[in-house]
Length: 115
Length: 224
Image (tube, rainbow over all chains, first blue to last red; front, side):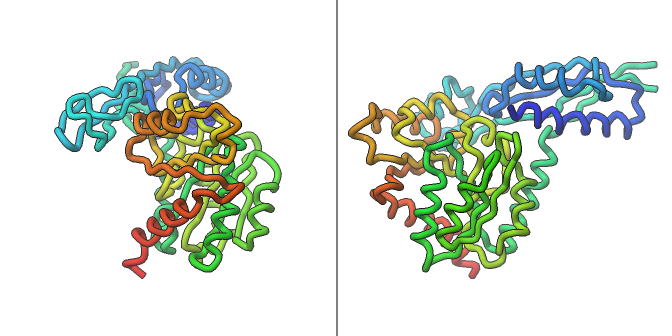
């Protein structure tokens, strides 16, 4: 399950951030996960509870925001939310689209306690 | 002691993104067209590569990196064509990442390679998330898997430059609606070019080979 790989990539980044910023601890980590990223938020949370044990983020709350799939039409230039993975413009039916959101896998915010 | 919220806004997979960018630079430097081949286990990735390696033997120089959890079975099959190949065993990882692929370059003649195929681990979910630095993502499915496959696994199909439908020699024996499959692909990945072929009989493969040749020419011929 690759959510474990993703959390194993996340934890050292958080450790480095806290150390470099000289923060006392993190209270909460907020992630953004795109609906098309191929990552399942529940699986990510499960992986986090396992991998966080014994690390600097043990006990730190993880919040995950899902980002919807949105696109812009290269023909009529409207921006829209993609529903049911239907990649055509709802206005002009063009399939010349540029995906705007939906592939994210980001650390968005960290709530920290300063020294 | 004060509490504050700090905006980070960084990619969790930034380490993979960096490795993928390094791979891109290497491909650019050595004029290599890199193709990431993805599918379920058993769709025919290795068979497709064996046929493609044989077809390109006097045309372009191919190299292959093959990803599997265990064994060198696929690498041995490809090696019989005479094409340089290296097996990446991931252990328990369900996908290749950019660093694993980069490590494989030391065993391949990248400088003399025109097209590098990266045969990903058989998996229609996890590999979608990991950029390997490739130019092209090719997703393979077989007629034995059902025409609804693209609807069931949208992330991997949505990112495809090309979708290949294999094992068309089995069409008389399976309930596979080709038109419905193509309609499903138009919905999920309208930008993808679609080929139908049989790696067993050779039917339809010439169009795939021609497309690959054109992709390589478009990428590098002008700069040669």
